[in-house]
Image (cartoon, rainbow, N blue to C red):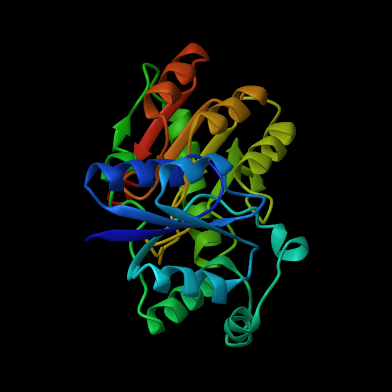
Length: 271
């Protein structure tokens, strides 16, 4: 591989992918979303094109002009921008017309299929950074109690069901009740909503959808996740091992240990 494209959203993931590619001698060409991607990404890539959400034709033309045939989707897009920041061109309108809803999986699969028709294959999110995938087992000094593990198993059943319905990837539970389910507002807002209702010692469970497409929209956690949990005095974070991106894992564990939060990676076969 001589070059790769990055379809960049917010956060550090585009930077990490760029750095990993450059270490392998791969040139990086980025299409970055205005209002989402960090302008500092310009210093990490060969060339960058800034677009608004929905400007698919520009994205394709930019990649083709640099002979990019493989690309990675990296970084977050604020989902509420679908209602305020979307600027669909004719190519995007064609994609939207071909699906019956704009839920994550259907929209992203249709987008990836359109790019593949143009000769641009979307690779898995972590194919350059497998070390980011969450490991199995307890990460922290404090292990979840038997009561907390019962909450994790309960939350797992719920999060897999909302994933099957393509609603979200996170639930917050306490005492066998669902405090919050992730919707379009995202993980941090879900943790805050659940924490306000549960008051304290809530359990946060984040997992992939049953038919998760590993090319995009993988569950992700990081230091910000822990900071949000600390703010509502949550007690456990459980994530799906091997199918969740964990950014700054060492910093996450250090912060969790300071606040006696347990973090655990769950293998689907063990739940």
